[in-house]
Image (cartoon, rainbow, N blue to C red):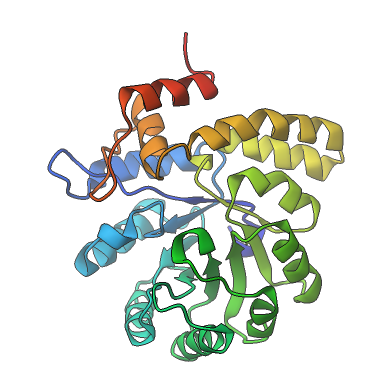
Length: 292
């Protein structure tokens, strides 16, 4: 599938075994499950994939295995960003050499708190270093710094900066959709905005909830594209509490619990993240309507 046609991209979790190592057997099961249930693209090694806790060698091995197991069925976007521009460039070049990676997801540099000029220069330098398509990842709730939509719009003129995963909100999405070229990909990174973002012209959603709600999101988008606005809106209203339940504690603990509950054994989280308590698990099951 062409990346530009992917409406629902799952920010995939990284399965761990009981020893806390990447579990490639379960990775295969997870990928097949996702692709059978609404997912039209994958992000590997992103926030939901617990990238801050993955060693460099683990990331490279994970990316290669994801390409192998996906076997060209959907596009793959690999996380390559960090707060260090030189390190981001070096890692992006390394990932570029992996045949089958369709784009790099590059997070806005965190911790250092660069201004807009610094953010622009960071992405400009990364893009100039690689032929790999770049998707900007703006997630100020985690990075404590945000790229201004005007900076994103300016960066969109660079040939291989092809899109943005925007978590700032609908106003930012609206401005970016309106003022970038038609082929610039604008994804919301907030599951709760999957429906309104699509309504205002976004490409779709880079989603956590699609791990377990992928078919529902796909049906909602199908209804919207068919012109059944009221029915799609009704689905959105029903989905929001379920989506919200998957963020009641730091992600990806809730969605990993949900997958484990379904028999897709992705294991727990790596410290400093911790797994859900029994009370938290009960709340998630209730909101997902998975209780008997």
